[in-house]
Length: 131
Image 1 (cartoon, rainbow, N blue to C red):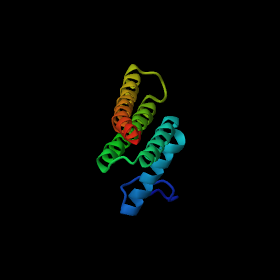
Image 2: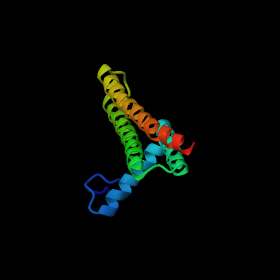
Image 3: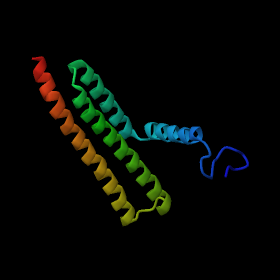
Image 4: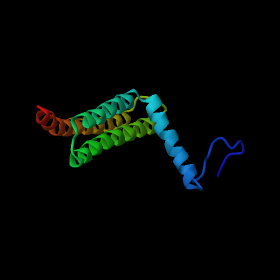
């Protein structure tokens, strides 16, 4: 159901375009509000540019793009966890909220480590081939 002022949707999406608009709003929100997501985006763009420079294979592109997507997804889920726990706790300290946030941040860290390892496995041999 849509509110009377038609600015805030409170019900289900009725069209794919409407759902995609909300998804784009979410992506914009994470990019504009989350500093770490901007770092991840910068790292991802840098890695893609490097991939073109050293001519990585199609198989290597699959691994690189998977690693980037996993880091982005983990950061999005971390942002959701932070927003929901802050809402539920009304921004007051709670050990369960801290635990949820720490676990979500740990998930981002693990995926970032995975991405770095994939980058090393792909780019070290690619750079060696250029020499």
